[in-house]
Image 1 (cartoon, one colour):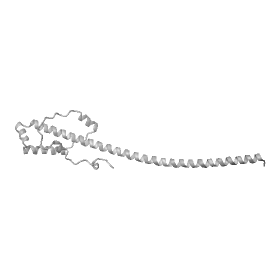
Image 2: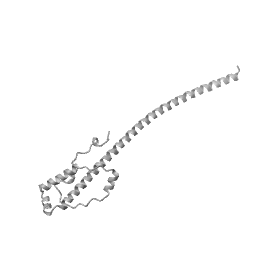
Image 3: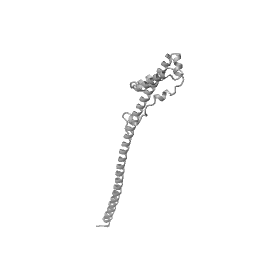
Amino acid sequence: MSIVGLALNLLLAGLLVAALGMGWRLNRRLKALRDSHDGFAVAVRELNTAAARAEQGLADLRAATDEAIDLLADRIDKGRSVAAKLERLIDHAPVPQRQAAATADPVAERRLGALLAAAREARPERVAPRERLAQTERPAPPLRSTPPLRRSVEDDLFDDEPLTLNDVRGATR
């Protein structure tokens, strides 16, 4: 074998060792990339699960808000009807009875208590939100100033127990 042939074989062996070293480094980097890709896939799955939970929470919150809107609209309607009934009673009462009502007539108090109890129990039919908006756009009848009662009308209207999350239709934690 000649020196040129030996030198070429040594050069080829050196290049093969260098290629082997580069292949080994490239394999380590590819393995690290695959591991990080798996970690990224796990993070994306966890993020997707968290987003689904947040979306469900928003839907529950939206349902609870709609229920609260319905409840408040019912109470507002009830309050307006009670105020209108009281206004009609005041308008149609003779003058001596008005003075007697101001001096705490027991008959008038019973009638007023019965009226408030009936208003508390009466629930109007549920109205879709768009229809309710159309109904609430009409102006409320003007109220006349009257002497204050011992208890305010708001106290009687809102004596119900407070709304809890379990009371809201379709709500889950």
